Length: 306
Image (cartoon, rainbow, N blue to C red; front, side):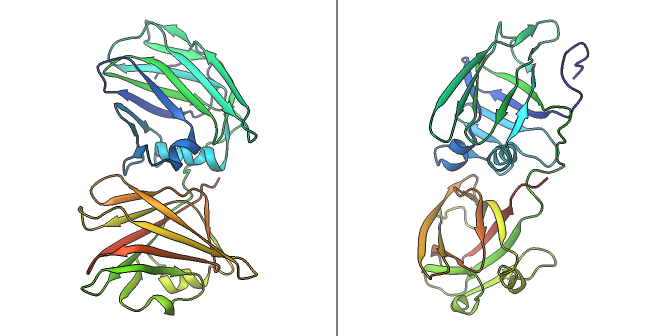
């Protein structure tokens, strides 16, 4: 896009597309990372695109999905100083409205409404408006026409450097297989510092290059794994959404256990509702149910890094 004569800073923008597949005008919800990543009401596909009824939001940066951008908001807030909205397909709206909602840790809410400047000849809107984006920041873009596709460029300050990747590297993936003809319940698939407890009736092996499962477990004592989401992939399209139990002990042997629910994103992939977790030698994971001879692939996706 040619942005000459605009006031956008000379920095690489965070770029997304918003596609309204409805016939009528709609509102696109942007950011709101804490709400969308933790709720089971909203869906992301396996490419990290956000889907809310007729609205689809997709990230445009290499190796950075829209879901990665939201996770970035959770882990490392950033600042936006300039926004450009380009109409790629469909009717040119008379105006678009940006409604920014900010919420602090004490629950105090602040709302700001911005009307971007329109340039009908270039089919774009722009605004020089600064705000910080964190886990609690929500931005609604109202007035998106039906069957319209927009590209939105969020510019950060020129002094900020955009990392090549927001997801911190390759996930650790391991396979868990039920080797019996029976349904197994409460199947231990990872126990920090101890493997012997889950060798009966199941097999476990790493699917990550150059990392075996025993080495991954043994290093958790000195190098805990910091993650920001998990996925489970099943060979069966008929599988019921799995539940993974996350159990943690403190140094006094007190433990807490909570379920991680997984939302189905396509025929075989499920994404967990856990954000920013830690796996060390005081953590155990177990699957609520495994079907006869079932194979599951569990992926731990690392936290975003600079």
